[in-house]
Amino acid sequence: MHTAFVTRFAPSPTGKLHLGHAFSALTAFEAAQKAGGRFLLRIEDIDQSRCRDPYISGIFEDLEWLGITWERPVRRQSEHFSDYQSALDRLKSMGVLYKCICTRKDIAAEIARSPSAPHGPDGAHYPGTCKHRPATEIAQAISDGHPFALRLDSMRAAKLIAAHNPLLFTDNEGHVHEADPLAFGDVVLARKDTPTSYHLAVTVDDALQGISHVVRGEDLFHATHIHRTLQALLGLPSPVYHHHKLLLNETGRRLAKRDKAQSLHSLRQSGWTAQDVRERLDRLSANC
Ligand code: GLU
Image (cartoon, rainbow, N blue to C red; front, side):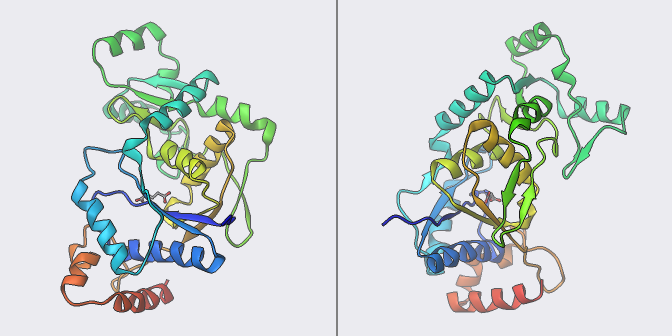
């Protein structure tokens, strides 16, 4: 059956799922059901130092318990590094990537020297040190084994995209937002030890999987500036974005992985049913 509505839940297996994840997964799953569309599950495990296989089986168990069904096979990002490499090659050929050998300490020191430098939703932008560093110095450091990152040259990206201006994306209520390629400055798109970043992998995968509607928490709203920029550079379609509210617990704090007692696994162990979860989510979401 051909359906126009395709959405996904894309957790990172770095811990157990909690009520916030259940809310996100159910919001996406129910939206797909309502639209007669498709629901996919994607495992975002590019950070091999933090992701663990038992968390992946835990995700499957929790979602099944909630009554969610998804298509197989499940895309696991760590099995698709070559797709992200192709996107990096394309960006490189467009001249919008550069190598950066700065350490966190170098960057902090540089920012301290120029406090009026641009800031974005994540704080101070990378000051662009390596964009102006002699290529020979960078090549030497890399051949000496120095770690490096690949950064987006956001100014060049903005110039290239200017032809399509304004750069827009639409939300699930039909509101149109303007994306700013400069919002986060020269973000990291890959590292020597992690050959893609979240931003690049999510953008490539949403396009490859034909995602028409991205459903995720509003903490990722601003990241859409970067994703929309990458879509424009890579010639990828732009899905509709539904950034849902983040649930708060009774004390007004965001539900997070660190609240172990709130994991779906431990709720299940203590006798909760999937219906109890749904009712609790209804109550919590009515408060925010
Ligand atoms: N993997 C991301 C997370 O666990 C979600 C990515 C997305 O939905 O765009 O926060």
